[in-house]
Amino acid sequence: MTVSPHRGADFEQAARALAGASKAIALTGAGVSVPSGIPDFRSATGLWLRYPPAEYATLSAFRADPAKVWRMFAELERMLQRPPNPAHRALATLEAEGGLAGIVTQNIDGLHQRAGSRTVIEYHGSPATFTCLACGAGYTLAEVLPLERPPRCPAPAPGGRCGQLLKPDVVLFDEQIPGRALAASEALVRDVDLMLIVGTSCEVYPAAELPRRVRRQGGLLIELNLAPAAGLDPDVLVRGDCAVTLPRLLEGWRQARGRPGGAAP
Ligand SMILES: [Zn+2]
Image 1 (tube, protein in one colour):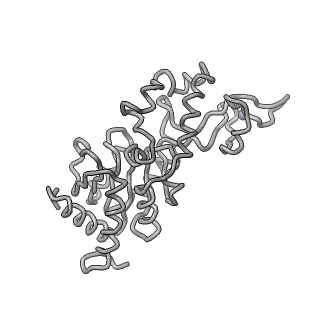
Image 2 (cartoon, protein in one colour):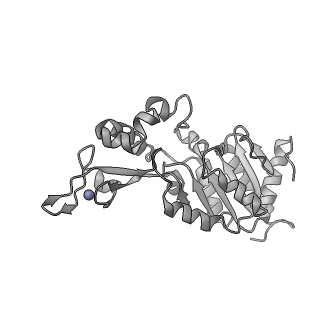
Image 3 (tube, protein in one colour):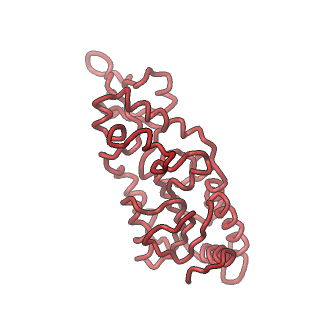
């Protein structure tokens, strides 16, 4: 399959490939949440311009000045309130109708889950849950909201309360991708013969390794991006805003799977 210069042909190719796949997954990045009003962290209006990562987004910065870093954490928390957009909803529908086995996302905003996606692996964690840096106790956002900021662990400890810092479960720059996310994505990517790559330039490892892995397994790569990711060389490239292109792909998939050559529903 080659990249076609005709946009309509790209959609048809992508839809037919998706309908013929036995196990498809999606890899998503910042671009899928831009239509929800969350600018790419790396963009000119993104989070890192206001909160330089070296100053804010490391565990050592948080330990050194919890109140300062909590200002950034509060912004991450507010992202959880943004509305999912048609791209999130199209992926959730595709999963519900049997066309997608799951999503690996580099986003932390929880919008895939809010849109209804069920299998979502969050490589960079989530600000919706919290862990005590001292005793390891875990908390939900609802449990942490009533606490003073920066919140301290309310778990009982010998001689009183634990009282140590709680940190949102987002993966900071000096932290590792959670082992359970890596293990879950390892299990999900097995036998995948098609990957949708949505709103990511595939530059950050280890997520960037996943498309290469799918290709080594003989799978197809369908890229849906505003601008092509450097070095990805997809089988089909669908350029454009994913809030427009993903719903259109969903429609094409519904039609293609009913046709000869497409997978029977
Ligand atoms: Zn604690």
